[in-house]
Image (tube, rainbow, N blue to C red):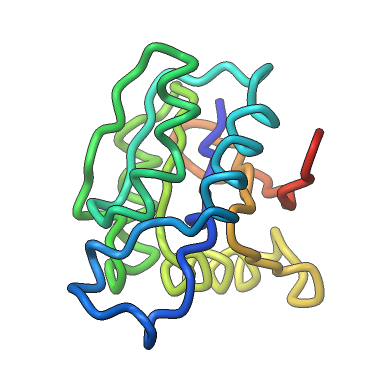
Length: 155
């Protein structure tokens, strides 16, 4: 089974946003990236879609969830600052299922740091572009392998 760890799509410049950061939406580019993400995952067997409660994360996975007739389940375990441990806990809690976890760059970085320490990812390949996905193969609730999928427009 797999956990698809998605970094939210483009939401513009944090400093230019005047409202609460958790309410910052995707830009037009980010909306296109969200649609491209849904298209790129069209053949994946997804059981559950979880997301940080931040608007930009929910908007990133809504097109995917809508295509699958699933709902986006909000999770505080995926919010900024939540850390890798909470993501790992979600993967363990959903073992045996294919899940999408949409989160933030700082959380993805912490997950990557753990994967690097475990020898599953080389530091040179530890990318985390907006809208990209890390596919973490899970066996018995543990991460067994990791593969990076950049967002490829028009795929």
